[in-house]
Image (cartoon, rainbow, N blue to C red; front, top):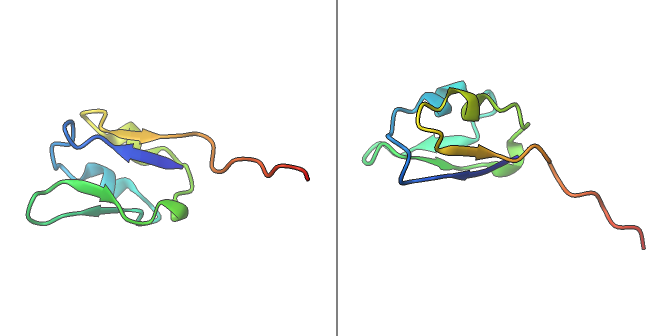
Length: 70
């Protein structure tokens, strides 16, 4: 699941936004910076992390924690 976009590294190129097949990311028109809009919709495809030229996107390979047995 997508964890974070490091604002200091994001250059506003929006490549990650275009690469996301689930429309998880949102690019602010004024600042050009990208933010995570719908993290639960992330299918952990790593497209955004792979295409980011500044390594600003961090994706965790674990979609969700396993439920605990009672």
